Image 1: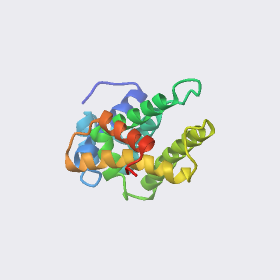
Image 2: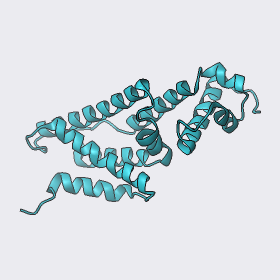
Image 3: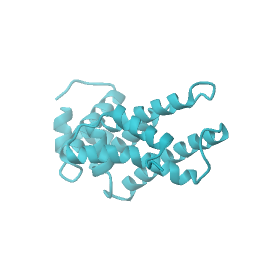
Length: 194
């Protein structure tokens, strides 16, 4: 068993171990015993911080979602807006391509229970809201066309999400720069040559 750590470090140690175990084994196959073995702590130590496997899974999801949201930087309207937006899409995509993040958000968290679903709904709702706000700013600055910006925001999110999901599902490496290039080509040039 590991040496004594301050409470916050011990809690983070357990969260890191749980993240690895859930990403490796999946929520349903993982057990508290797997988490404590990965963390190198006693069972009692686990229960000092978390009531159950479900409780630690919820906390892992909250941390993952917060990290993804934190990768987005506010747009400085005095700077190159397209470059900043592009950097934000790349940052989110790169963070989401982490195999643990992709598996946890796109496979393990879906349908575990209502609490987990609520974390995902809040995350995706916030992501769409942020994209829509950026598009509204772009519209006010004259660089975004008229149209339903809520639908457009969902489309942008979908382009990022599906590349991560399908890459993970197929076991294929996804090049963040290639995805960002295609998203921006699609956004600025469209798809059809008419």
